[in-house]
Length: 393
Image (tube, rainbow, N blue to C red; front, top):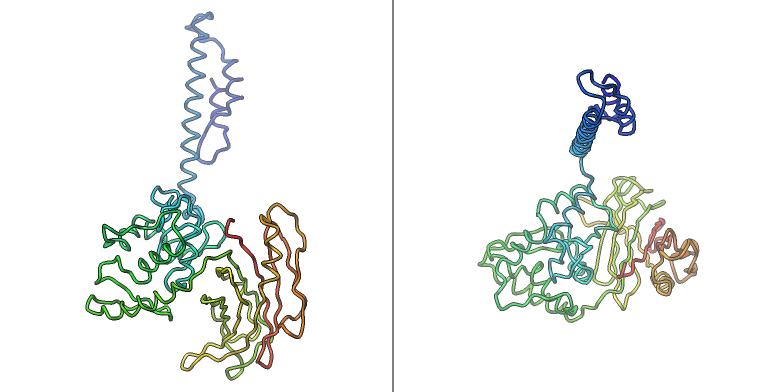
């Protein structure tokens, strides 16, 4: 029995004394006969019962050890987000009930499908900040906000609280216009909220509570929204733009500048954070835009942030997206190919390129590095990395 006790207490799991099963079998096999037991079948039964009991206790101890270790380890942000996505009400799009949504509105707190994602993006980030559950990096605050809302059911209990009984929500096979009309009514116009709780979102990112007596504001907003709906188109993909750094930017304050970058594609506008007092800022900040069928150039502007006056322009440039998109389209799923160059945008007097820009498949993703000389300014260059994401990814 001393041998059994020794093998039971020699396990390496911290905080537990568990047996090694192979050694346990060996030691039990050499247990000498008990002086008060016969050396026939009774001894064999006793040995087998003792062995089974030890194995049972070993399994229980192992399970307890694993459970305690998991309890002591904080869940990662991505793990928390995926756990939330696995909840029953989050397995379907909050707006059209399409299964297996892979996108989310981080500030609203809902999971949405790819088709509804395009409409959300057209609302602007001041209303709906769309992120991919699998492709994007989430901040801790964004994940906390999603968890705090609790998912689609909790959010819809607010945003659809006063939806008319005869109103038909769009389904998974709804047209783009049907989705756009419903999503704008739900989040931008807030037609289905209790009137006293409605919030009118402004382009500046500020919000103002609206009482039920100020219906004229909503009516005006509805008129503007209807005008925009007429020109809406479906998107063909997503453009991820990593703003890497600026070099030798222009001085707009006494000795330096507080630069930030604004990107515009069609009706969508996104911007980086502001970096204080730096003419060679490093952002390494990723922004995302939806690409419509009839896309134009990606417009880029650099501004100097001023507290008490209008922000000063520090240069501008345009990026031709055609080399990136037309090169990527024939390859479909880039993950099936190795690292190769598939296209090039050549420097010329008609564009702002510092050097030729190549389009490459890198680790299964279509990327393009772009160095631009800022226009209509005395100095400054900007480095970007573009990535094309097809809608079916």
